[in-house]
Image 1 (spheres, rainbow, N blue to C red):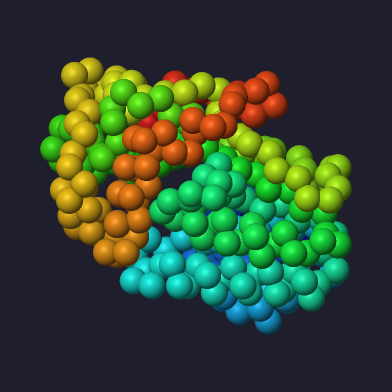
Image 2: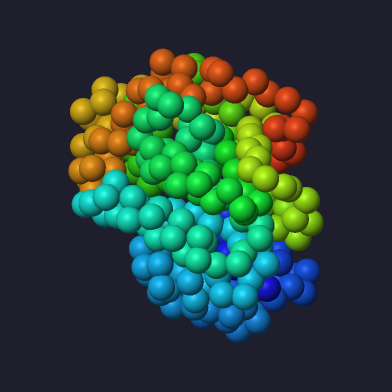
Length: 289
């Protein structure tokens, strides 16, 4: 049995689908979002709260391997505090379980002491799980998800412009979540990691927001779609207007400003092992047919 957190999310859903196609027994946590479809497909669904170690204990009972992560609710007014509670609960549940191999879905920035924005919660979880010395732990630290670009579609369609606080000419390693899911699934199945290890996943290449915007525009029939770097206060207002909590919007802007200063990717060299196959062009062709 393999347990998966975040089975309703971009990566967790793909990991679950891959495991089910392999004919594996899968148990998923139904946290906030219904997973009836996965239950019909054969997954065992445990309904519970990701901040409750008892519910997580039921998810992990009798499983050989598990993928864990911090679910994100971008409307949460207590985003940081609630993620800290989930981090504590995950570590407690794993510590009380017999799960031998754990894959943690993390991000590149979580491996650095000067962590900024939402990755700070993942750094806390990484540090808590580091205390579980008797477990085989693999940290998958991914770069910027290509799926994040799709959040701009409503503004693009309504206003004919794409923008954020990011410098439009800043090279960013972008990765498709299907590549993250492929790696996570393979490692859950092979269980070929021992001790505590970390692996960076950086996508096939670095892409600027200006170039990504041009690629999106071409798919939408808007070849002249511009990218604009907006002032931080304007971005915060736009994010809260789109439904994010004030806390999350501020964290997102802080992270974008830190990225403009070179955090966290400047210190992360690209290698053959960290390079994944799906290009932005291939991703957009599927996402925006």
